[in-house]
Length: 496
Image (cartoon, rainbow, N blue to C red; front, side, top):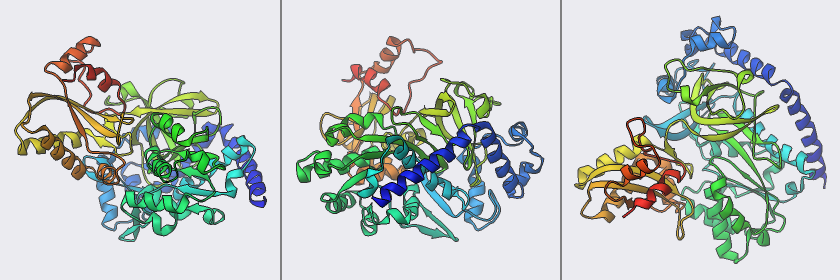
């Protein structure tokens, strides 16, 4: 009872504090911007881009072009070689390792100044829920956080690991007794073995909160269901809350609801290695509150201008509702005018709330794997060296809810010349994709995904489909990758 009482009081206090900056969002962003420029002006990046002369956002736009990982990689490499004061004073506290770049694995810096904001935002998402719900019943029971291995590897004095693994080191002391799984189970690398152990540890526990990305939760829920032959709410009658993030929840909602058995509250969050961007602050809306007072200064580029030489870059005061913007971040970890590749639109301007609408570039990441164009093109090129075939066109899309079996990536391929052994061709292609993308390999190895499936599109199928939707011509090219099935489902009419 005492823990519930304290949680409700603390939630009320924090929500009131947060509403202070929510009432003055532009001023909050101006303060964050000034702090970042002041602290970074004597770094190598700051000196090169004349941070000492930057007085306002317009100066920043003139001095700092839009960056992506390829642009900052030389600075990252220097830090990894031991240099100090390169992007941010001193050196990063952590590297958040992620994939999805032509350079291979990405190393995203997290500083001593920025890590508390990651943790605070995750905490505040729960506190907003407590305040909105009017109770804190879930704090009485066990809470499970499905996350990566918390064991970190040190590289020249900087700890490196996945963001979820880094976050595991910051679970507050008052939740440690409620937290599952055990540290030993959390460090298991084999995902299927890890989930089996988690099931063993939790199936008789009083679970009240479950957190993780949707495909991980589904695997956990299905194993629990097989063990008990009960729905989750029958097994855990006190289960109150699902916390999710990382990928779009909606494609998984129907499956998760069926496994749960009864309606459970869900709050969605928007964490990234680059910073904790937003969380759901209302029970009756999936819109996400953009966090403007913490460690991130935001810029927004209208999507249609993103690839222009000098795109329009605006701050929070100039955004409009229902316009698709590319999201640009400047952070207290040493990222400046950095494009994370996401697109968002504002659903509210008082306060500023958003929905994530997609990615600037085509990709496939329905399960958090972030497969990019270069990876699929490289995989095809390597397989064609081993097996004679000719590919005219292809499209890759996730199959999240197959009629039977595990989800998978569907490759819709129109061949000029088919391989003699399609099964072998598919196997080699899947092996190449696993070699090129470690996250995809983890998902296959952990039996969250099954190997890719090739569906052969009939001769002229791409042409016929594009013509049928009025997209035939030089200005439109069929997307090589998608994170939904809009194009794939239309093209499926032309499968042999």
